[in-house]
Image 1 (cartoon, rainbow, N blue to C red):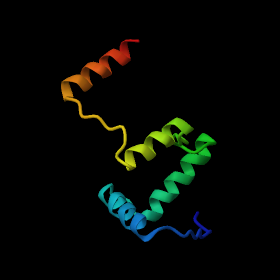
Image 2 (image 1 turned 180 degrees about the vertical axis):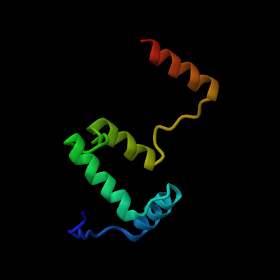
Image 3 (image 1 turned 90 degrees about the vertical axis):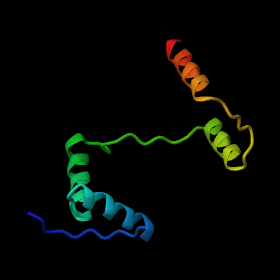
Image 4 (image 1 turned 60 degrees about the horizontal axis):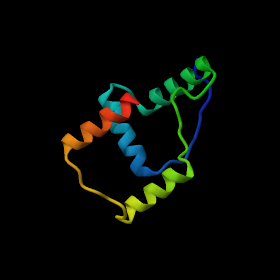
Length: 88
């Protein structure tokens, strides 16, 4: 039984994008929030991973924003590098 109302402030752009996304899934925003809450209670945690970037990642992201240390490589080289990294 639903007998409680929750109010929350959110950026209007994010709300619009979320409404669009959930409508595509056949859900209302309220239903999606309800699913999130029920799943959180069932799992006794936030039902997805939240990552906080470490200092190195933050520095790399800032460099990317400024256009520093960027290097063009081919998709072939990217695949090779990825394969090499996965073999280790």
